[in-house]
Structure formats: C-alpha cells, structure tokens
Image (cartoon, rainbow, N blue to C red; front, side, top):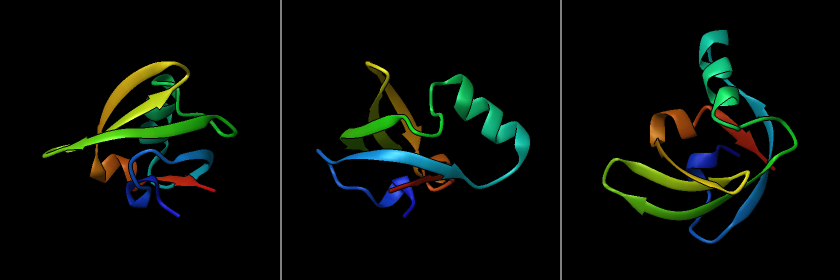
Length: 70
C-alpha cells in the first residue's frame, strides 16, 4: 500500500519506492530507506507529518504515494 493511504498513528515498514531514480534518491536522503519504520503523526492541508529515524518530516501526498509500505 502507498504511504499516503496510512492513517494517523499507524507505523509501517518501507518496502519499496515508485518513480524516477532522482526522486528515490531524494527520499532516501531524507531517511526513507527500505526496511525503516515510518509513523504517521499528523496531517495538514498540504500533506502528511511523518516520523522517520526520530525526525519529523512533512511530505506532500504526491511524494507519500511514491513510498510503498507493508
């Protein structure tokens, strides 16, 4: 399932990415790597607030839909 579909308070494991290589590299630079836990801590008008590697990151739903989680 895409990360954009995960509800607030849920924790999932990153399993894959969709999209171009440069976008994948950008997400990996932010800490979104395969096998890492990601928690949805909130939502706002422009996207989602996520907790990954102990850091809160705001991500728009377009990018969140490129991250596949289990």
